[in-house]
Image (cartoon, helix red, strand yellow):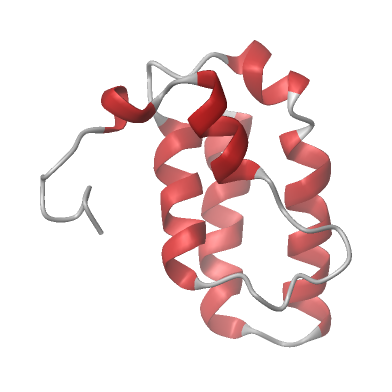
Length: 92
């Protein structure tokens, strides 16, 4: 929300500890994920300043795969487009 209202910039939160916290998914209970969380992850993953090595160290792709599988199984259509956007950002 802070990013949406231009109160902070992505470059200001690209600290390893912050990124780690943002991408930490619960591997057991994914039901707490929400649209704003996914939007933040898309913004972080697609930021030019993001270090791909950090994303690799955090095993972000594995966690996102788990969430994408959960979204698909639960037919959460509102999340599906966002999740595919996150996957696209990581591929780019």
